[in-house]
View 1 (cartoon, one colour):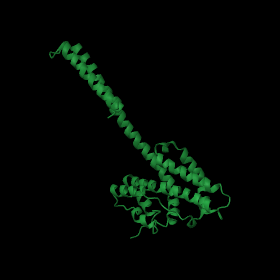
View 2 (cartoon, helix red, strand yellow):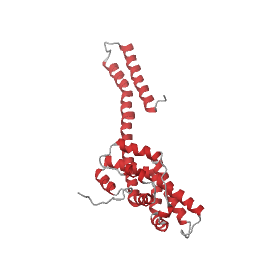
View 3 (cartoon, one colour):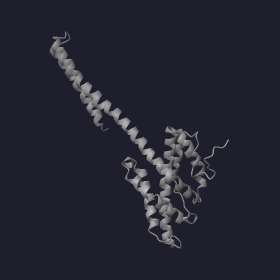
View 4 (cartoon, one colour):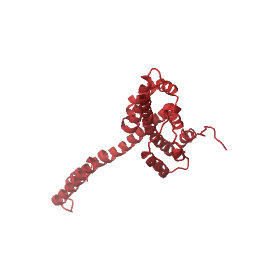
Length: 248
């Protein structure tokens, strides 16, 4: 097993301390020798431990804190995406999915869900390719919506915070590609069957990639921001009876 550089450095520093105190024992013995010599050996012997505490342990603590802050910022950006674009796209796509009923029950996320339920639906989605009947979609409306959000999508793609989230970045690219495909056609009515099939694949790609990202985001909200999770749960794009109004 390959050791991390922090582990190698820690072992080297501890060994250095052991060697220094071993030399101290050989040179001045148990009786201690002069106070000056004892002080020098103690100071030098503790130096590697001090480096270990400051360089390795403190660095790890700072790295964990930095990672937590980056994760928080990243999920804030992802939350903006779903508020502005993602949730509405999922709603339109799920309405055009003739096989949604096979997954709808699993996607009705509840407040009582544990990590096990989120993992189950995530694994279930990995083996499922969702379907789209493009005739059920209003392509003109979809085109207009994505063009309206194009600047917003571009800013998200340029956001360095998302560089560490490869799957979400790929999802953004798929959404932007769909926007370009729709924009490149002057008239979206009367398209030939081959072109309809091509657009269907582009839409299904976005649908397939966006759904697990939504599940991940919902799990994050449930763990960290219950009040945001409550609203997102009531706006569930896969729930045909979803309403933001709290019922008794």
